[in-house]
Structure formats: C-alpha cells, structure tokens
Amino acid sequence: MAAAEGGWCLCKLLRFFCSLFFPGLIVSGTLCLCLVIFLWGVRLLLQRKKKSEITNKPGKNQRVIAFFHPYCNAGGGGERVLWCALRALQKKYPEAAYVVYTGDVNVSGDQILEGAFRRFNIRLPRPVTFVFLKKRYLVEDSLYPHFTLLGQSLGSIFLGWEALMQCVPDVYIDSMGYAFTLPLFKYIGGCRVGSYVHYPTISTDMLSVVRNQNAGFNNSAFITKNPFLSKVKLIYYYLFAFMYGFVGSCSDVVMVNSSWTLNHILSLWKVGSCTNIVYPPCDVQTFLDISLHEKKTTPGHLMVSVGQFRPEKNHPLQIRAFAKLLSKKVAQPLPSIKLVLIGGCRNKDDELRVNQLRKLSEDLGVQDNVEFKINIPFEELKKYLSEATIGLHSMWNEHFGIGIVECMAAGTVILAHNSGGPKLDIVVPHEGDITGFLAESEDSYAEKMAQILSMPTEQRLQIRRRARASVHRFSDQEFELAFLLSVEKLFT
Image (cartoon, rainbow, N blue to C red):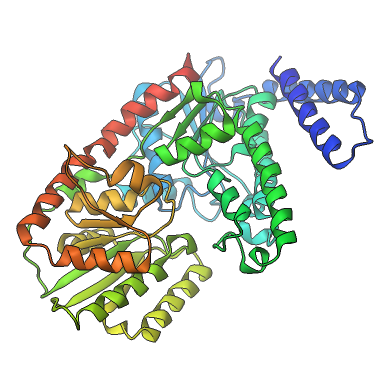
C-alpha cells in the first residue's frame, strides 16, 4: 500500500502545480491510476533484489540500515554526526548490516574510515558497506547558477535513485539534508525513513529576507533593487517551501540539531509528533582537558575564530570589527592583540575567499595583527584554543555552532552572533549567570571585544568556568542517548 499511497501523494502534488501554472489542464484519474500501477511495479522489482548484494548471507533475514551522506569523507560537524550515529546504532543493533551512500568515489572505504578516526577519533565497532555514487555532481551548487535550491533538490532525487538501485535498505536515514530523497525511499523502496536536519534547505528567515528585499549571500543586490525580480523570487521561494514541506512530511522520524532548526522544520514540515531536538555530538571532553589559566606563552591577547571559510560564516565582519577594536586602543590602552582565523578550505572558491580576506585586512591596515591558519591538524587547533582569550563566531542564524561549543569547552570567552543556535541553545545562562557574549554589528562586536579584554582576570575566569560547565549537554554520550531514543520508532 505504500507505493499506492506515494502515487496518490505525487498525483496531489502534480494536480496542484498543473492548476497553478496551467489552469485549463486537468490531471485525470486514469493518469493517477497509471502512476500508482507503475510505482507498485517498480517497488515489487526492488523488493526482489532487496539486500541480496549487501548482507551476502543467504537464508538470513538481516536488517539493513542505510545513511545517505554523499560527502561522508568531509571533515565537518555533519560528518561527526554521521559517525557517532553509526557507532551508537552498531552498539545497540550489532546484528544489522550498515550501509553509507557516498559520492566520494576517489577514495576507498578503508580510507574513509581512517579519515573518520584521524579527524574525529571515532572507530566503528562493526563493518560498514559503502555504496559509491557516480552522479554526485547533480547536487553540486555550481551546476545550477540559477534556481539553485530547486536544481540541487531535483538532482538529489536522481542521486537517490542511483543509491536505491544499488541497495534497498530496511531503514533509511538522510543525515545530510536531502529531503527530496525521502518519498523515493519510503514509497518506492518501502523503507522506514528518518531525517537528521542540520539546516533547513529553505527557512522562513530566507523568505523574510526576500520579502523585505534585503541583500545577502543568498539574495543578490541586483534582485533586491528590482521589485519585479524580488516578487518573482518570492513566489519561487514559496513554491519551493511548499514542495520542501511536502517531501519532509514523509519522514517517520525527524531529528533537528537546535531550537532554531526545530522552529523552522515545525513550520514547514508540520510533523511535530515525530520531531525531536538531538544536539550534535561535540568532542567536549578533549577540550575540557585543557587546563584553565590566564598564563600565555605569548604576550598580550589572542582571539581565535574557528569555522570553514564559507561566505555565510561572514569572516569580513570579524576583521572589520577587529580593525575598529584596534582603533580604540588609541583612546584606551589595551595590551597587544592578535586575531587568528582557523578554518578549512574545501575548494578553489574557498581559497579565493581567504585571499580576499587577506586583502581586506591589508586595506584596513591590520594585516600585521591578523593570521590565517588553513586546514591545520587537530593538535595545533587545541594549542591555539588553549592560549586564546576570546573565541569569535559571526554567522547570522548559525543553525547550531559546534565550533562555539569547542571554544567554550576549551576555556575561551565566546563572542558569537546574536541569532540562531548560539542565541537559543549555546550561549545561554548557566545557573543564572552568563556564559559568553553576543553581538550583531561591527560596532557591537568591537565594543564586546573591548569589554572582555578590559575585564579583571578573575571575572573572565568565572565566565569561562560557567561556560565549561554548560557544555556537558553537548557531549557524545548525550547525543547517543537522544539519537537512539529518537530513532527507536524506525526499528519497532
């Protein structure tokens, strides 16, 4: 019946768009029936080949659990969620077979697992089968210079189809945000499906940015200046939000990484009965092992920014605010200050972004006080955090902020953007007292920096201790408990 249900759901969607764009066109019941029969036939064919290539154990009914994570060999927070989730499931369901759909065709499965250990210190207790997908280019944003959200989402359906043709699992979990694959695996593959949402593909905030004609990294200035183009884009966003809500509602279990993400997913997917917050796992213990002290190996104060060099991270804001802080030194004496920006570069676009940031620091005359550290080893990151006074973060509406948690665990005084996950979940009072600071503009960032640096040592130390005490709720152990409790429905 699942295929039939999926067929009728697709027919409803088809009728909606036909009535919207072609009012005179009627999608007949015959077409709907043909679609249902076709989907049912495809499902029967898939059920016949189900699991045979993965379990490799004739006669044994072995459950197959699959994760859809086309970029599983990357080193970001999303990948840490993947490996921690797999480790938790393998401990609880050791008899199951585990599959990861990935587009990292240039490396072997052993290399991927070794990379997970090197980056995150995570070793899986049981084997994993990697299903390598050759069409990952279909979800690359560079392939869609216009209508990027729609292009990537439709591309993910074809990528999901490639995955489904190679392995039909019992349980399917999208751990990277490709919601448009959910109906495919649920209605055609006959799977129980779950989602871990790091960031909604479209949010009500994005709709408001376009509606108010505000410029941003996802809303070009030439569109904001043209009322007609703004209205066209707003209609496109509303239509896409409708489709995104439809496919997301197919999920049997939904996990979100923060209160901010929860609010948007509840608004768009409308499946509150099966939606839970599961904070991402942060390696807090490693950073908590750094001793709290004010002694520095170098004179003055060090500020550290941790985050990939992507446009939404808004590193220019940090450099401009830092330049304003240095200009304040003329009026009020402050010790020598240095800003170190630590992050990963994924490609040439990120490398170009770093060069632009270097140029910005030169234009502002602060190049001698700004340093860039690209793709540094974990031990070097720990060293910088152990010496830093302030941890900086400047992304607007950051969905969570693992780097912020790590900075707080390491003992820095955090200064983050007054929005999203940092505001709602992380930089919040602990036992009634502050754990860090929030800012929005260049001026407010510069003012907060000056305030932190001018504090007595003991006052800073108290803030750092409270921040450390507050981050235990983001540990690996807390994640495993919450994750297993949330996905239990998929296995009953």
